[in-house]
Image 1: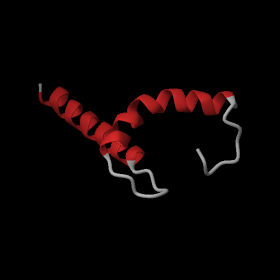
Image 2 (image 1 turned 60 degrees about the vertical axis):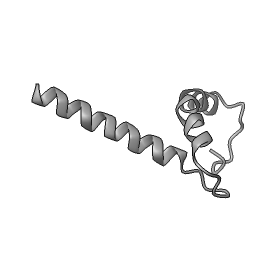
Image 3 (image 1 turned 120 degrees about the vertical axis):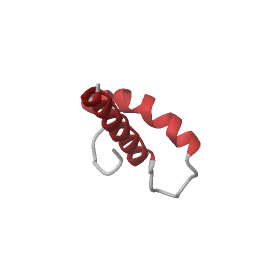
Image 4 (image 1 turned 30 degrees about the vertical axis):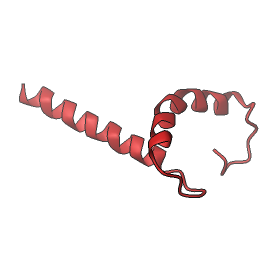
Length: 62
């Protein structure tokens, strides 16, 4: 959210942080630091996509 000039006290910003941080923080611990670019969101999105793809395949096959 650092790209957008909003207050960290903004209720929407706090909500987004509270919802996404439990998913992003473990990935951030695993990935190496890459300067200012945070790849953890991309990794989490890919993992969620893979899980959904797997679940849909299991449901449609069963």
